[in-house]
Image 1 (spheres, rainbow, N blue to C red):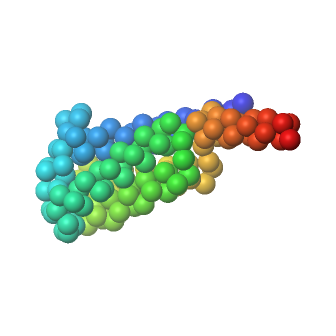
Image 2: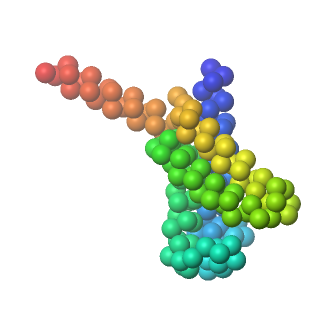
Length: 146
């Protein structure tokens, strides 16, 4: 029972930390910059694309965080989140290691956490598992009717 609980804790932490950061960028929740502010941050880091890029990246962060938190489409969502976080890590690289100086330490930690979720899968305490069980039950019922 400890392994499913460990996967749940990792998934909830990784998705639960990423989701509000995405919402802050996407719609300004939790004191976040909203899309205009996020677009400015991206320009500061030399990322091209303006508002469209900000929408795409904030959406990836928000949706992948929510899906990982829920344990739904967990592996692809965790891969997308890890990709986003590795990009953030790369952009923070010129500031050094420590997050206290806007360095790469914190986004790298979460990229590794999301990579772990992608490798381990959602676990038995997830919507992915519930969906799989529901689908298998339907297959069994359909097979019994034949």
